[in-house]
Length: 521
Image 1 (cartoon, helix red, strand yellow):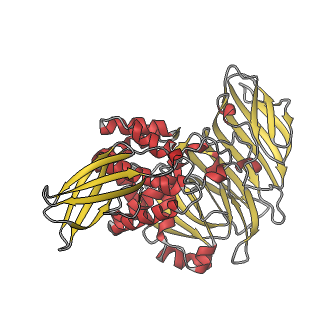
Image 2 (cartoon, rainbow, N blue to C red):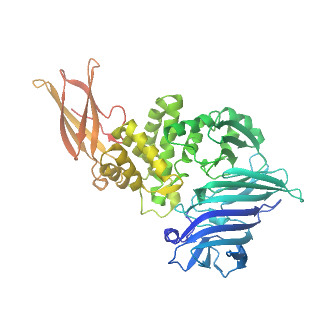
Image 3 (cartoon, rainbow, N blue to C red):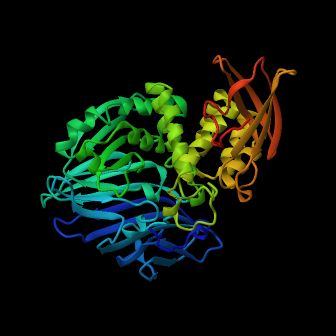
């Protein structure tokens, strides 16, 4: 999907939303909502106006709250995509009253069980179709939702459930609030008839609920298969990275267009895998990892999306290895490599500043290669420095935003060495190394000469491989391994061996993202 044109990153330098407070009335039938948004925003002194994204809705009024808490109408301009409001000081508290039928972002329909539902589905820049926002990941804010819903419905949203109030009409008003800043693409509501099961809470100063929201027909399956270890998954991430960042975690069966969508504290999953009984724990691990990386630490700009998807893809497997053994990580990284090699983006860098459409960044560079960047970094600096760095990165940038250079700085500090070459070649260069190795055994010297060459396309550049492992296997199945540093396109190395090898293998354990072409004697 091509993102709707909007103010983009320039807007983020002139406006910083502190909090959004939304009131939404959902209809019994049809798709038209009546809504208001109370927005507290800081405006740059050099800006003469504030611009809010809102697409194809009807704006009824814009009110400015003065120092005496009186709401006064203010002039505004609305072109069907952006509300432009004159700046009134460095701190503005505005109320936007609006209504209409969202054409995207808020999905009305019938679920797989035939019941009417409503779900937010904002990624990447679709919150603007139903919520007035500064709709870019660089601008994070706290949020509150007050949702009036038909009788018999339940509402789930970000953060903590504040209250549910019955109304004289027989409808109910649900209120949720998240007290830490989150990106607009994770601000959601889910509305319909749900069965809610409560899993073991996280034990903190205030216990954090872990909940599973499903349609009644899918509840037993969800609790016994994909979400059986929902709490253990969160606890594993807490041990590896740091505290869970939100007031609760709800796993919600929904109508999202994605397999899973990592909305902060309220993850939405596509309903069909529930119905087909094919949903498994992997997607739960991936989306749960996003609560730390993507939600709490958010990529400031879309080209750095791997800081969200690569992290979630890698920690999915790291969690799996912690719970079920190292083969989860080994097998998963092998699949990631195969998927990346077969993809259509190997000739583009991970940090792809030339790509303007965030949807096109949902690719093997952001996911599979991003996971490999972390895996190889871990292998380079060692487990201790790697996890110290990850924990420090989370601590420093939690509830904020980051770009790749900031991760690099943190990892350099914890590893105690320069890593610019590593991040440059794996994030900013396209492709990966193709290696050929020609070997010849010298019986007099009792050693194997290895002629290594990188033969990937010139446009990809050369790769520095400081820990390239080579294994020689003799006819008697004896294995001899050595680690070499390959800093150029070609390199000569020697391996001491008492007899001629039957085979020579490069990177036998698959620790690097490379392709070894057939070896020759």
